[in-house]
Structure formats: C-alpha cells, structure tokens
Image (cartoon, helix red, strand yellow):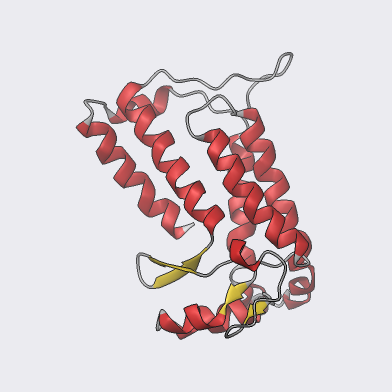
Length: 198
C-alpha cells in the first residue's frame, strides 16, 4: 500500500513530462472502484495485527489466511471489471502470483528472514512474524514457491521493505496505468454487457 502511494505521484510526474495533465484522471471511467479499496484495505489490516489486538479483536487474527485469500479474490474482480485499462492485464498477473504463493502456503505470504534482517527494520520482521507468515530461514528453501514470497528488498517511504515478484509487477502496472491516463486521457474501461459501473 505504501509503495503504491509512492508510485502514483511518480507516475503523474512522468505523465506531465509527456505533455499530459492531471485533469485527465477525473475523466477516466473505472468500474467497481469499491473492490480496489476493499481488497487493498483487507491486505493492509492483515499486515498490521496490532490493530486487532488494540481493539480487542485479536481472535480475528486466526482468520487472517481467509482474509488474505478473500482480498485477492476481490482484487481479481476489480481487475476483471477494468481489464481494458492500460497495465491491468499485467497487474492481474502480478496479483495472481501473490495469490498463488499465499494460497499454496495456507493463506500466508512467506518471507525470507535473512533478507528481513538486512533491512535493519526489525519492526518489519517482528510484525511479519506476528501476522503468522511462514518463515524462509537461512538457506532452508523448503516452502512451496518461496521465490514468489517476500524476499526482495525495496526502499519505502520510511523503511526498506520486503516485497515479492508479484508486488513489483503490480507496482510497475500501477505506474504505467496512471502515467498513461495522465499523458493521454480519455482512456475508459469497458463495463460488462448489461451492467453499470459502480
């Protein structure tokens, strides 16, 4: 979520450099935007178990694997409704890679502890472990599809983060989508036949 927030302004600047304008964003027809907010919102909550403990809802942490999978199903629906937008096909593929490794590991995104330690962000390591994510420790690469999990160090707004290959594809897709809209404008998604945009 944080990296997506950082990606959007950079994409707007790139669109401006191509002769675009910010007002083009307001002209874009996006279907089922609620699904994007819902999907990313659930993913955000799952990554911060302290929120549930602070509010006394810590019993819900047990259901994080279901929340994780549900979030991606909702995001797939959003991608499907807006498949004709630039970069949406690639974003769908990135989301699928994350969904695949999360599902095959019981609803949790695995992370590589040695890479987490190299970030010097110990809060990230503790937070990730508390959320119940499977740990890829040392050279023990036995978790299914571990290479699709969080092991790539990437600079964030406050700390270096661990992200996955799927995350990188999604971030590039978001950049391309926003940059293209700002630069060209009048790009519209195509709602399904017999349905209205929400």
